[in-house]
Picture 1 (cartoon, rainbow, N blue to C red):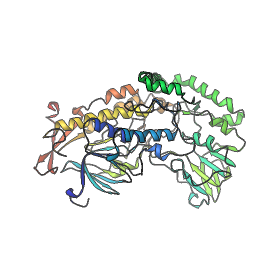
Picture 2: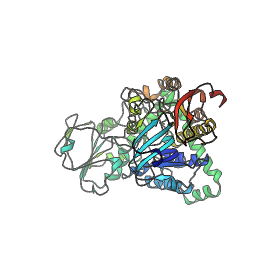
Picture 3: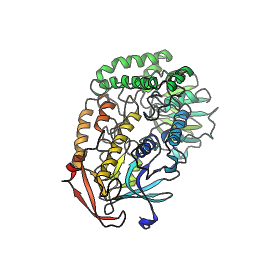
Picture 4: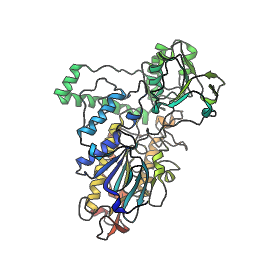
Length: 523
């Protein structure tokens, strides 16, 4: 990395990303008294996936009062399930309310992060200059980099092509023949939103999803007034939404056979709108409900019943000019293709940009599957933490609950570093580091994978984006959010190696980091 250390801005903590995870980390750092930090964001505004996904119909499938920070409640959510514009506005509000703007470095893409084992700090190259940091918090999120399949002939398609997470608002779909590729959470929102305006919509379905009704409604002015005037009513609403979902977890993680009743309800939801038995058969999944994420929509099936909407129950095989050819041989001529094909979840691109102790990237370390300690830290990458890391995803509740648990862990991590650092809290720059012990990482992941064996995600008979290329579920947490919060309440120093650098008296520079195992108990 070029340049001298004194030419680079040094910070105590560098946070990468400004979605829920990044902004939450920034708020928590300030609450811990850490103000020497930056939030590096590649885009021109905050919001993460709720900034990037602006497709028609984009909304959350978790109730609004549960899909928000506990420390930043919003009494004025307009609907029980909020739309993308409201969630994005909420995140902008969080950035303003908690004084995060001075810490933001927008239009600043992280190009590489390298661990300096001598100085015990991270060297960070960005598109807007270089930084050094004692600690890195990676909050890029698993739904940040769209995945578009390599379809033969795609490059020669003469029409318009874009991914749902990169919606082209300058292209007017009205009166066009449109192909929607995929039937995930984005697709079931896009199809009803655009079907009334396009000439013809063809949905390419490789695997049908289970879809339950989405009981969305406007939140009345009276309810909002009550939540503003009597905050305990807002807290009670959130608590009820949380408790119901906690009670559901056992069926997903221990007793998938109990999900049969839910399947019956989903089939009834379909039957209300889909009268054609042949179409109903194509839309009925052959796997246990919950194996893939259960989707919520009350408009999806009615949209599929429209006369200008066709379902091709087969994946896209190739493209010949403007004609799309499915695996079953069906041919469809279209003007535009919208890919709703998900994201790089188990192969996050940021992993190629993180270089650890041995000079190996995180992607290389994770080539056989993502692994971390308590969803946060990785062996070989000291003072580096990820928010929404391996096995922290959920199948039925709010990810904000998991993020807040990880923020508790981050807070104690920074606290422990302050106690371990000579000179007190942050007093010695980067001369102390915590490195997750490989044995602790492996022990944690053995526990997680053992619990995963009984879950519907592993036994339900489907192939989902929860699974990596090796068929391992490295995405979902096999327990309740309450369990995860208990597991991440504090940092257990026995799971870490304390690295110290020799105090040279030269600012943050240090040399010859020394593992200090014997001091862990006294820290």
